[in-house]
Structures are given as structure tokens and as C-alpha cells.
Length: 270
Length: 252
Ligand SMILES: [Zn+2]
Image (tube, rainbow over the protein chains, first blue to last red):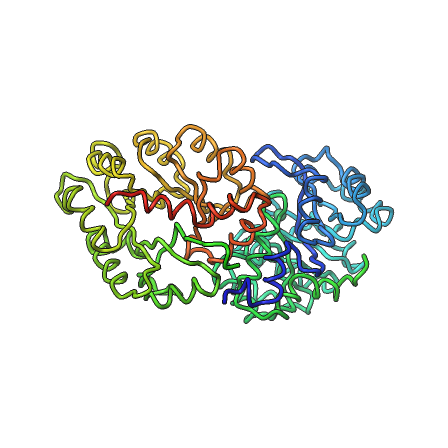
């Protein structure tokens, strides 16, 4: 018998399209960015896709807030209000606009419950994650014990192991979501978890479907340190969920990844 | 589950040059396929680039000879005609049939030749006559070269894939639109609901399930196909019906 018949979670997704469990997708984007073709990058189409598979919350940073400085986070808040049950936002931090950072974070509380944390994109903003330009935002997150999703990639000069190691140690009260698990530098990803003060989670965007990686990460850091993400609208929810279900890990590991870890961090209602 | 027949169009096995977790025997590959519910597979030799066409074709034939399940078919690699390293088309295709080989591939960038009519025109024309599929795995990520190749050999049944994870629609759709014999293997089509978009626009007969094992897990693209919201008949064609039909129509 295949996993799609034998494993209860896999069987449910296979037969019904969803499994009656909450899924927290902690790494999304939004916005029809025409640097690539997107058919479904606006809120309504994304929400329809998310609902099919049972995503309870997508926490996202908007492409425009990341890539076009004139598009401010306040507009992302407006989008969240249109889909209040499902959408949550990371405040996108562009280190080259300190005034924007201060203005946006001054509104953070007013954006509750939609704003849940911050998003850093060091490679694309050509600024190392440990650069002083991020200090104001990170100190804000430290004081409020917020999650910060930071883009990472193995051996990057801006968001590789050394840059991330500096900030996860410096800000022990921030919950760091390591986007893409330092993709390719799996040893560095495990070291980040083991050598940090317990505040690091590896976020899985682009990993499920790769052979053996999820199995090895689970063995190295434990599934309690892994959280689910897709980069939607870049990647399909069914591909990412199918990739997790295809990994040779336990059902308990899968439940940790899909929802249990996030509920331990943020609670069940947020 | 069992109502859906999966035929993997893009899979490699054997002993990899640099080691690693790859099915080295038919039993190991079949166990992996069974874990995910894959019925049949079209198999290339994983070490084709380094070991060269002649040796890897022979090793793959031995691999298939040791399989008693009948669920595996092979893919042999071709070479330019001028150096007489492989027999002419008639003999080559006869050997393919005797060795359970159902399709051909080529690796011009690793094997030091130019993919064009001058080098492989005769065997490609013969393959087109006989409807023998041609796997273009060597062109993955080389879109310029892929466009040129498909333009040169529009009569051949070709299979290509992507491996970038980022949606290739701008690169892919012109090929599907202009070349009716061009088929796309969905192994890395991670675009949200993208399988449905392609099938609705170009027809489900142009798409093939493939795992791209050992690069990706067999399971990676099974669930998005099953949940693509396409009609069940289209899902069945993409999962395995199309490839099964194409291989049956090949005149070896
Ligand atoms: Zn991202």
C-alpha cells in the first residue's frame, strides 16, 4: 500500500483535498509582480487556493512592500482587513528607508491582529542581516517578543550562517523563522538551532519535495523546530503539503510542522 | 488511490558516480515506487553523463534484465552518427526493443557534441517516423538550447522538464503553443494550480507526470496533480495514460 492509502493524513489530503487539521503557512507573499508570470497573486485568488487545502492562516509580506519602496505596509493592512479570517501580515522592513521603518512600526499595534511580526529580505535589499540598519526594527521585535521571518540561503554574504548567527544570539526574545532553512547549508541550519538560545525555527519553503532533506533536518534538530511555508503565490500549497507527506518522518513530525509548533509559539487563536 | 495509474516519465537509477541515496537495483527502485504508488517507470541511467552513452546503455540493459516485474522500461542515449560509436537507426531500435528500451535521450553538453541536424539528423528522423519519444532532460534549464532543438526537430515526440521551482510559464508556454509534439513533464511545476492552467490551455495530452527521481521525491507532484481540480479523465492521462499510449505507439 502506498502512503496515500496507508497514512491517515496523506489519505485524507489525497481523497478529500484537506485533512481537517489547521495549516499555518508562515511564509507567503502577495502581489502580481511582473518580473515573473503569476496567475494567482492577488488576495482573492490566493485565499481561494488556501481554503481548498485548509490553511488557517497565511502570514505574508507583500511583494510591493518588499520591492517598491513607495508601496507602504499600511496598504497591506487594508488587504488583510478584506480577508480577516485567513490573512496575517509581516511588516516588510526595507533597511534603506529608516523613516518608513519608524513610521510603520509606530502603527504596529493599530494593525492588530493582522500584523504578527516582521519580514527581512537581506539578499534582495543588499544589506547583511546583522547590519546596524536593521537594529531599530530588531530592537522593536526584541522588546515585544515578535516573530521575525528572515530570508536566508546557504553561503549567502547577506543572509548566510554567520550573519544569522549574530542576530539570533543578540536578540534572544525574538522568535526567528529561518526562511528556506539556509537552503543548501543544512549543517549551518542545524547549528543555528543548536547554538542559539532556543529562539530559532527553520521555515521550510522550497524544501518539501527535495529528497532526504526534510528527513535529515528532522533528525538533526527535531520536528519541534520546523515550521511550514510555501512562498505562495510562488509555490502550490498541494506541492508543499504533498512534499511533507512524502517525507519519511512520523505523523507526529508532520503535525508539528503543519500546526503544532506554531500553536506553541503563537497560540491557537491569533 | 489504485484507480489512478502512475507512469513516471522522468526517473534515473543505478549507481551514482558520487555515491548517495539512489536506487541502484530494480528492487530498490520498485520499493521506492511502491511506497508512493507509482505503477511503472521509464528509467534512465543515473550516471549517463559521466559513463558515456555506450557503457551506460549497456549497464541500463543489465539493470532491466535483472527486473522480473516488467514495470520498468529504459531510455538509451544516442550519439552523433559520424564517429560510428553506435549502430545505425534500424539496428539501434531493434536492440532497444530486445532490451526493453522505450525511448531515447541525448547528453550533448556532457558528451562534447552539438545537438543539430548535422550530428543526429538521421536517427532523429527515424525516431520521428517510428514515433519514438525523445527525452530532453539534458536541456533542463537551458531554454535557448531547448528552443533551438525543438525548432530543428518539430516532428519528434519530445519530453522536457524544468528544475528551477520558479514558474516557467513565460519560457514554457511558447513551446507548448508552437510545437504539437512537445510534451512537458510536471516534475517541478510548483506553480499554484498551474497544472490545471496548462491542461486547460494546451490540453491534458501535452502533460506527463514525472518524478525527476533521484533529484526530487516521487511524491512531490502526486498530490498537486490529484488535487488539480481537472476532470478525472485528464488527471488519469497526465498521471500515466499519456505516457503509456505514447510508448505503445512507438514502433520499435
Ligand atoms: Zn519568500
